[in-house]
Amino acid sequence: MALSARVRTRDGWGVSHAVVTVTDMTGTQILRAEADDDGTVTDSTPLNPGPYTVIITALGYTPTASTAIVSAAGRAEIGQITLSRQGGSEFPPPGIWTIDPAHSSVAAIAQHLGISSVHGRFTDFSGRIEIAKYSEGLTPAAAQAEGAETIENSRVEAVIKAASIDTGNGMRDGHLRSGDFLEAERYPEITYRSTGLSPAGPDRWTVHGELSLRGVVRDVDLDLSYLGTGPDPWGGVRAAFRATTELHREDFSMNFNQVVAAGIAAIGTTLKVELNIQAVQGEVLPEA
Image (cartoon, rainbow, N blue to C red; front, top):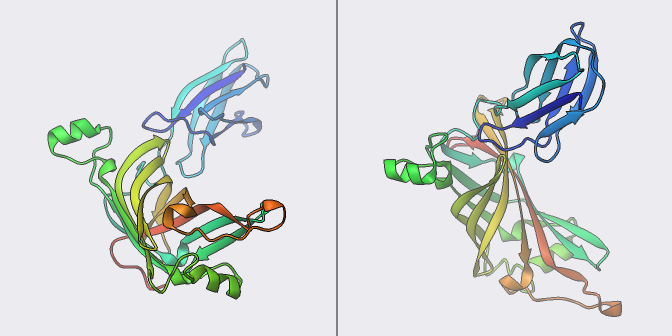
């Protein structure tokens, strides 16, 4: 291969969406290559011997550039490139972060008639995230020995108003609020409280927690991705996250169903939940 490189985060995970661009000394682009799932970049485009500029970019990370010398054999072995999160941290700064409902979404997707999906969202919710004070590179065991915390000590809690379900159809929404599904009048709030956090990949975490839905409490894990931190137009600082999970309706006593032709259930038994969250640093949301 003419070009080879490994793109990693500061804690050693491969950055699978990194892009490596090589230009000559005039600024002309010679090649562009994307990293594989392990953050490895290879390209067989022939390169003439001499100096080149190598630029590495990835969404959510600070770009980096360096000079590479292509050997007489036409190879440029870049080696390992370490990218830093934009804002200088692999995690949000420690402290309280308040979820901003105006710039966040809580969505659920259910299969309908076995051939399509119905999308719904909750329009009334709130929550807070507490990022633990941590020392980068300190393992949980070492932190415990020193009486310190690690990022795994972070916590999240959220409250969703069950009656705020919105699928774009008033009759269907009324049915979802009824005792067949959310039973919103008797159980007006859906709550989630984390019980633990464990790493799952580059900027990815598994949030372990308890979901309370229509009076039933179940352990539910969230697959969480940290998307980065940055300033907002109102003088604050925001952190972005995306989380997904799957719920089984029968786990929460939502057993209603209607069987249509050929024994196909009108509504699927599994719900896909997608959370896109913006959280503002501090305990007060901006007036915007």
